[in-house]
Length: 64
Image (cartoon, rainbow, N blue to C red; front, side, top):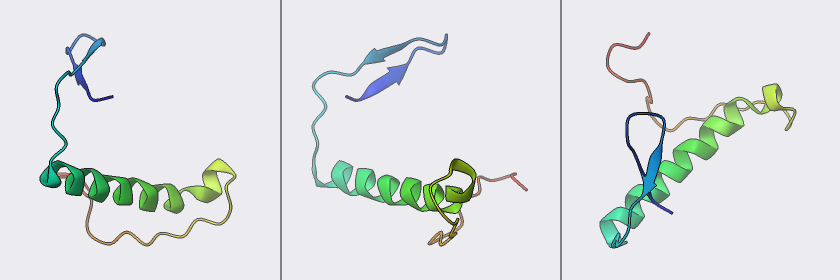
């Protein structure tokens, strides 16, 4: 379920979200990024050998 942070540690469910083609593409891209990051730390979580194959730079501006 889509949710929104209230900024105080709590959250609320977002109702009436329309999953159009744009949103589905963004969700699919995010899922791929998360799975790639999971593979990078697999050796730390006991899920096998870590293989880091991130398709692009995931650093935020200002990160080192």
